[in-house]
Image (cartoon, rainbow, N blue to C red; front, side, top):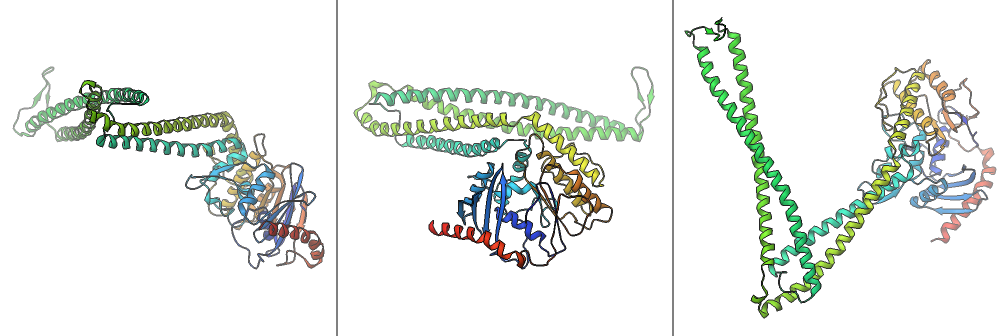
Length: 545
């Protein structure tokens, strides 16, 4: 069978092979759709001729074994390994999107399922609110957003390669930092057993020790300044809270006296000292007065809780300051060492420590160099990603996508919605007959965006089948009209449908024989085409063993 480069209608009743033919196209290229065909022979051989950028290729598949040929039917690759096939497919299509795996421990290239994901609407997994068109995609770490941004042009392929590299470099950077901290702890424990501050026979070790002491004092000074500032702030805040607590307690004490006076039944009326007006003590006034007291008690309670937390933070800061003072004393004891008091035993004991000091210093320098190098790479990748993801272009693409989605809903007889916050990955989630139509409007918005000036690829679109969730005699014609007339004219489209339609398609393929994709009349012709290529594939795979 051959397809028109534009709109194709694949028509036939149930079990005549529409889905079998469509699934075979994708499985031949290495993308396995969800679902399983009943009574389908897994040893079926399928051959697909396709073109990329004017270059023709042949893809052959039989039970997990695949081969790729050029236009002259010369072998490019024959393999039963999915990874090797995916690499060959990505090479001929120039599809260079990469991801990280679930554990973010390794970079993995995308596969054919990623390539076709936005462009295939199948019966088993595409008409719902989740991305379930193809199996096997969940091994990647959140691939949906990256795939859609790749094809719509939000981020070019270089962005995702840089992002994957950054994840790897960041993990290496953290590992180097952990090793550096471990080395610092090892040196500290070792120094407790065999002091590293004894006499140095090697001038380089002495210079290294001076450098470390200088670095240590500098770091201690910086930490001390930060801790002192934090301690002062916490103490000021604590003083303020304690003052507010005292004021609240005083106000509550005054309330106690006032409340007692107001509750006294035989007390005199309240007389204003300014205008001498008399005020009666109504029950409502007592309630308002009591409510003010309740709010005041809650405020005092919250202030005490805040004071407790601030007091705890202040204590931690002072404790850390005390630890810094111990480090200062340790460095001071090293600087106070006098040569005149040294004994021969001190020199002998320091020789072993000096060797360890030299080894530690070499390792420290190597780790610091690795940290600096990894940090430089991470910063460079951050700058590269920032340049590649232009906010202005992203906004323009999202505006086009949202506009296409809104207009598609109107054409499909759905209520208008506010899509100003809609994301590329925001698949609609509607029940009833409106669900499939909203999904179709969503896919159509993606296709029209991909066909725009920022789109990365021109990939054929396949819809199987648009009659979902019992569309009635009003909505089904609207769906078919939308597919036939509203989708971009310059993209290749294949639609599977059970019934005839009056809407125009460039080519119609009619299937009418149940459970027989390959007809007996076509067997001899198919065998002459496919059998020589099967022999080449198996001969190549046999020679590679």
